[in-house]
Image (cartoon, rainbow, N blue to C red; front, side):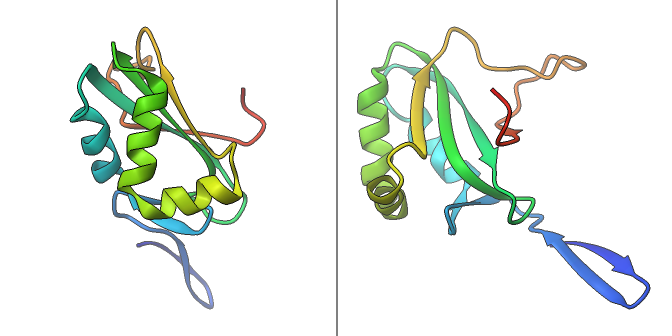
Length: 125
């Protein structure tokens, strides 16, 4: 956990592991990306999370962007089948999970590296 010290004690500000919360269910970044990357026609993948107001590693929506020739609908179906909490989220919040084929994944401008996760605010486009 990330912890900051306040004059009257400690304040927990988020998990330090590679997990995130989507609509109150915890997911491991590596598990989702590994599942996507193992699918035929996938070159690489990246998670785009829309931050909720609850905690620093809490999201209201998940987009999986990928490069390659795979069909988005098949990848989405596979991910929802593989992770039972995603199926429950999809039933209740049908717009919370999206899968997009993209020409290229987003890069960090300064380093030109491709991050595995991109966090966006709820008002970002």
